Image 1 (cartoon, rainbow, N blue to C red):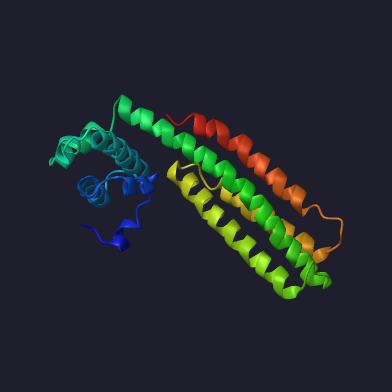
Image 2: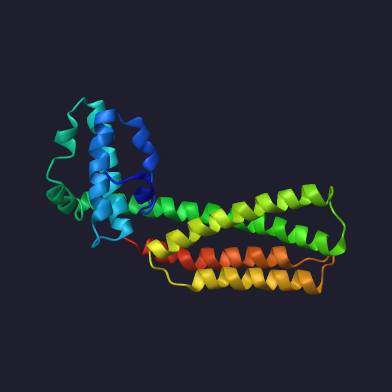
Length: 216
């Protein structure tokens, strides 16, 4: 079985559901997980689809009190080949696609608010006019920065997973640089940086939605 460090190299959606399985089913699932981890031909998306199919089958099998080997057989090669295509594969791919679209939208909204808070602190830092005091404002800005960075990583992972290109990352980078430049040049109360962040969000949303819909 692969160690914890190796498992972190592969992102599997809904992996938290494994905790709901009993010990025997967990062992059966992780046997498949380790097999997928060693597969260099399949994409991470395909691996996640197959793993989620297995997760659902394990949950159903455990409820029906079936033996784990009847759900995930010893011959993993045939099992993986069977669920690498067909209606079950397509249905799970569509389900994960919808989850990823929701994650991307929610993450992007969090990024807008979090980055806006960091920029607000930058303005206060330049004008020496803090909401509470420097220490408290700095802590809030650091937390907001961490939230923005975490959601940026989620957004980047999803975009790379579906190979949507670098356009969205370039839009984010250009928007943030423009906002920082505006703050440095004109740290006044008249602030258009939040508007720029919102515009960037809607540009991404409008352009990426048809790309998600094209994923079958």
